[in-house]
Amino acid sequence: MKKVFVFKTSVRTSKQIRFASRILAAIDSVLRVDFDPEDCDRIVRVESNKEIAAKVINLFKANGLNCEELV
Image (cartoon, rainbow, N blue to C red; front, top):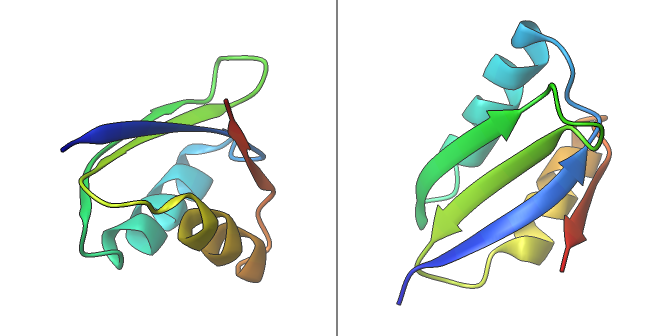
């Protein structure tokens, strides 16, 4: 079953979006990623068929980016 996870991030620039996209591509269960850097919370939506919230948050933080799940 697919689920969309929504995160508040510190991703602002196109360079950071490319970097974060590479980070998320390393997670094999990620099906789709959508960034909204114009949003006040700089939202990233991640579609997956597995529970990945903790993994996404940990990968972002390990690479110097803030990330928290919005529920």
